[in-house]
Length: 254
Image 1 (cartoon, rainbow, N blue to C red):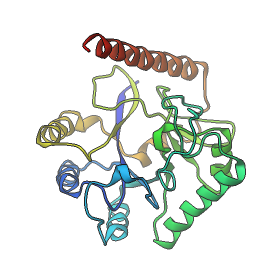
Image 2: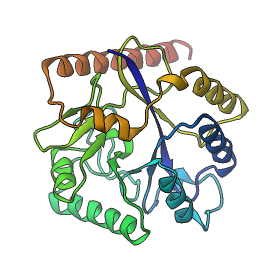
Image 3: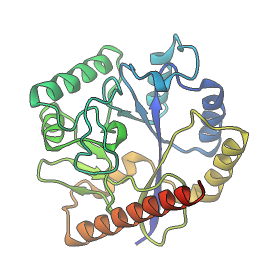
Image 4: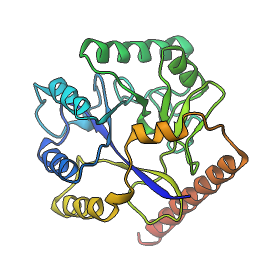
């Protein structure tokens, strides 16, 4: 089994850090990497304000999609309303998990309507804070979404709703022995060192970076197996252990 990577950038919205993004986009184009861009359709989160709003934002999104880059639907407003960690259990705050079916149906429909109005077809669900529940998935499937970028398994797999889960396990490039690994990046607070590091990692890992369409074509019919559940739980526990250790070390330093 070969090791493959996907590159995903979250929090793509009109007020993101465009100074950094121009350098990120340049590096992606130079290396021929086609990322997943998680676009917030109607951002209402003040924590995502890093620049003046880009008036041609949706023109940019259409250009990215025409270039072959994958557009993800990153929630609706990107504002957290509950303290529910949802299915993945990574963060205890959510824009969706714990809300009623009617509320979630409205958010998903309204988000999809914005994309349709702008002539953009979102291909994959990317939940803010990795938090969503069974109702979210049922409504996504009902409204035509087919792919989810989340979870900790080593390989993509179908769930009982017919949704293909493409796992997202890493926050930085790392050498992994096998599997499909999505590297989720957030560029808004990057400085020169992070930009330079990103360029270096793209060059280093380029031969093993796939695009979303290639992954979907390879794993479109793959059913979940026991190995997926075991690997998912192992990665989840490893992440939790690192988080507890980091908190303990931080407290010890106080």
